[in-house]
Amino acid sequence: MVAGRVPSGRLVRGGRLGLLAAEQAARGVGTRLSMLGQPEQARRLLAERSTLQAAQQLVAVLGGMKGAAMKLGQMLSVLDIDLVPESHRELFRRKLAELCDSAPQVPFSEMRKVIEDDLGPLSRVFSDFDEAPIAAASIGQVYRARLRGGRSVAVKVKYPGVDQAVLSDMRNLEFFSRLLKSVLPSAADAGVLDEITRNIGGELDYVREARTQHRVAARYRDHPLIVVPDSIEEHCTAHVLVTDFVESQSFQQMRTLPAGERNRIGELIYRFYISSLFADREFCGDPHPGNVLLADDGRVGFVDFGLYNRMDPVHVEHERAALQAAAESRAEDLYRQWTDRGIIDQASNVTPQECLEYVWAAAGWHLLDEEITITPELATSALILAIDPRADEFRGMRKQRLPPECVFSRRTDLFTFAALGQLETTANWHTLAREWLYGEPPITEIGQVMAQWKAERDW
Image (cartoon, rainbow, N blue to C red; front, top):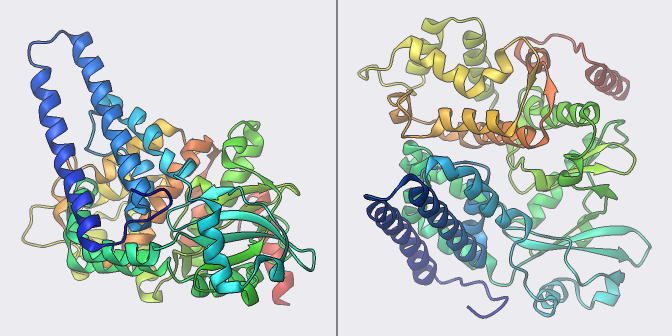
């Protein structure tokens, strides 16, 4: 592939994804055959080598393709899936995380053309522009710059050809479904794939994202604990997104902070990504560490609103009612709700008790009334228990219907849990959940500060 060029043709991209799936399967068979008759140490080394090769290939292929294929790779990087031996999944996750942390960069000469095609000469808008990207993501790269008026800004620029690349990926969803089925068998459902298509395709709409970010930034303007950098809509176009720049520490730096500070950050992450769904009926569908910042003034910052979703109040109330039933161990009520919505096929062998146990496995951190320290191991175990199709537990549940409207809200829940696991933060998450689960007043200091601030704004 020519450096900086994003392959956009449907056949080329579909062929790469199909070849990738085939090679992953062949590698698994080859590794298993080569292990026959080998001592334990040899099997361990072969498994490690296979894991590294698989991860390296995924990074190279998905990272080089960028677009929706790379977004899929980023999603997979926080999940341990059935592509590698169980004993080496963490090694695989760390390697695949390179898709988030060190994505292949497109030369600035090519990115500059994208900017100037939309905004005109750089000097017309910017007094200073750092040509070295500060971040590289699935759709574009981010740069630091200064507007002619002196305002410090972050400039997100689409990769050349990425629009067509994503559209090609969307037409090749059958290839995505092969990989997604490793995570959740019901991902092959047409309604689910349509929802994924709509959301990932929506990330291409920088103008919409700028409007969304401006609205969310206005909601949190002058907030004492949270900051959302505002978009500067007059400079936002189809291919360029300009927002305020937040002087901050990265998530990796946050991980080195004392436990008390990590706990404070963890509660704010929970409130921003989880509580907002039930309080505001909208949520950010992309809660990964690269989108969380610790501002120099101590506030926690959130960026990237391409996957921001609003949810129908009816669906929100269904979610709330199901979690209430699970919290109160009302298995029959939970089962009835799910059969009424068509989630559970009454002809299946799924029982009310299995439904209850599945919710506790997937969302029990909201329901258990005690302090929990979320570790990487706990987050990984919960994710695998909830979605790994090989596990004996809940095999019947995974064959049931996944409501399309819940695809990204469930993803937000699971990925928030995974991010908090990387931060290793402690809280009684149930006391936070009771605010949106039962409408109870906050009992934490952070919750009370936020409630007071909101009340003063509403006066």
